[in-house]
Amino acid sequence: MSPNRPLARRDFLRLSAGSAAAALLAACTRSGAVTGGGAGPTGSTGPTLLSPTDPMVEMACGLPPRWIRRIARGYHPQRSAELQILPKAPNFVGDGLPHVGPWDYTSLVPMFWYGPGFIEPLGVVDRRATLADIAPTWARLLGIDLPTTEGRPLTEVLVPAERRTGAPRLIVTLVWDGAGRNVLDAWPGQWPNLRSLIPQGAWIEGAEVGSSPTSTAQIHATMGTGVFPRTHGVVGHSLRIDGRIVAPWKSGPGVMLLPSLADRYAEATGGRSAAGMIATVAIHLGMLGKGAAWRDNPKPLVVLREAPNAETLGAEGPAWNLPELLQQWYRFPDYANDLPALATYFAELDRRDGVADGLWRGNGLADEVLEGGFESPARIPYQTRLVEEVVAREGFGTHDATDLLYLNYKVIDMVGHIWSMNSPQMRDSVQMQDEYLPVLIDILDRYVGEGRWAMVLTSDHGSTPSPRVSGAFQISGSRLAQAINETFGREGAPVVEQVKQTEIFMDEERLAENGATLRDVAEFVLTLTQSELESPGVSVVTNPHAKVFEAAFPSAVIPSLPCADEGSEVGT
Ligand SMILES: [Zn+2]
Image 1 (tube, rainbow, N blue to C red):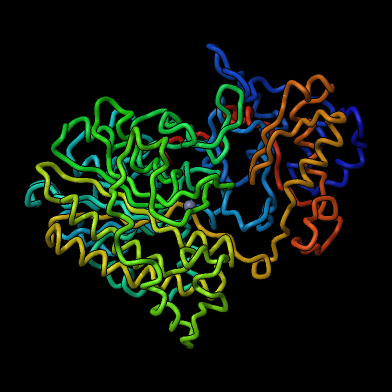
Image 2 (cartoon, rainbow, N blue to C red; image 1 turned 60 degrees about the vertical axis):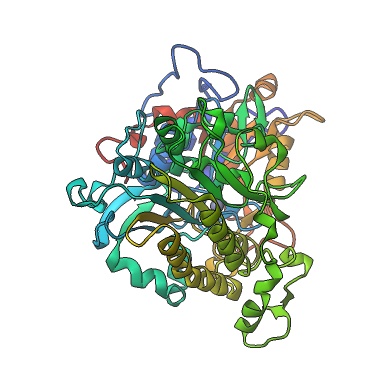
C-alpha cells in the first residue's frame, strides 16, 4: 500500500466502531483507483460514478447529510483539492483559528432584510435560506432575470410590486465578516440595535452559507452570483487552475466563471446605475463581480485596503487603496484617504475598557499588533465615514436606475482570528459594529431618502471558538503534510502540495509513481493521532492516542454521493 511505511492491518482494526470503520476495513482490501482527481479535465464522459456500497461513498454518506450537501456545493472537479479531510469537531486543522468547514458553527449566519417600503416587516421568519438566495432576491426586486441561479428569491420578504412606490434608489448588501450566528449568540447583549430592527424587517432564522469550505473569497462570490462555488468556480483561497495552485483574484476577475448580479444589472441598465464596493481585501470582490471585465460595463467604484506583498489573502495595508492590477476593471476614489485619520476614533474606543489610558484591552492602539489601530473596532466609525463620503460624492441613490452598494466590515473576522470569538476584544467589536448600524442607516436616509432604499445584513461564516472553550485539538497542517510525505512520498519528492483546513492538494502523478492512491492516503489520514499531529506549544494533547479525523476520502468521490443529492431540499 505504501512504499515506505506499509500500514499494518491492525491500524485499521483500531478505528472507531461503526460504518466508517467497516468501510475502511473493506477499503483496505480493495484500493481501486477513483477516476478524475482535479488535476486535469474529467473529459467529455464526466466522472465515473461509484457504487453506493463503495467504502468511500459509505463513509462520506455516514456523515450528516447537511455536511455532505455543503461539501458538494463547494466542490469543483477541476479546481478543488484532491483529498477531503474532515477533523472530528471541534478539532480543526491549522493555526490562527480558521473558520473553514461544513459544521453548523461555521455555516449558520445572520440574514436580515430591511428597507421600509420594499421589505416586509415580518420579524423572525422561520425558514431556511442560503447566501445563494441573496442575488436572486435582489434580482427579483430589480425586475431582472438571472439566467443561472442555485439560490431562490425569498419572495416573501419583498413587498409585492403593486404595493411598492416605484423601485428602490439604492440596494445595499452589508457583510459583517465573520459574524456568524455563533458569534452573535456568544454576545447576545452586544447587538441591541440590530435586534430592535428585527420586527421592522425580515430575519431569516435558518440562514446558512450553503457550501463548504467556508472561507471569505468563495462565499462573497456566492452572495454576488446566486450560485455556489461548484458553479462560480471560486472554490477557496487556493484553487487549481491549469494544474497550478493559485490564489483567487491574484489575476483579477477571470477567476469567476460567471458574472454577478451587479455585472448583469450594469449591462442591462447601461450607464443609468452605479455600483460600488467598500471593503478591505480583493477576496471580497466576488460579491460585486467582474467590473469592467464583463462586456463593456463601466468600472465600478472599489475601495480596498490590501497590504502590498501580503502573505495571506486577509492581510490589510496602511491606507485605503486598490492594487494596480485591479485598476483596469475597477476605479478607486482618490479622495478616500483625505478623510479624518483612523486615530480620530481611538479615544472613543480607548474609554471602552473602562480606563482612558491609550490602550485598548492591553494593546496600544497605534501598536504594530493592531496594525496602527486598524485591527481594532476604531475602523468601524472610520470606514462608516468613508461610506458617507462615497455615497455623497458619487451620488449613490440618485441615478435613473437603482444603484448597488456592497459593504464589508472585517474587524469581527480579524478579531476572531487573533483573540477568538470568546475574547473581550470580540465583545467590543460586536458592540461597536452594532452601534454603527443606526449611523449607517441614518446616512442612507439622509443621502438617499427614507423609504427609498433596501438592505440585507449578513455574514460570510462563523468564527472558531477558542480551543480553551471548545476543547478542540489543533491539528498541525505541517505535521500532517510531513506524515503523508514520509509514508507515501520519496526523499525530495513530496506528494502533498498544500494542506488546507478540510482538503489536501495532492500530486496524484507522483503518488501513482510510488504505487499508492488517494484512497490509501485517505485511509492513512484516518489513523493519525493527537501525538502524531501535535503543533508544539499550540495544541493541547488530551489523549495522545486519540484519532483526530472523522472522515477522509478522495474528492472525486463527491459526484457519486447519493447523500449529496439536493432533491427538493435546496437550502437545507
Ligand atoms: Zn470572511
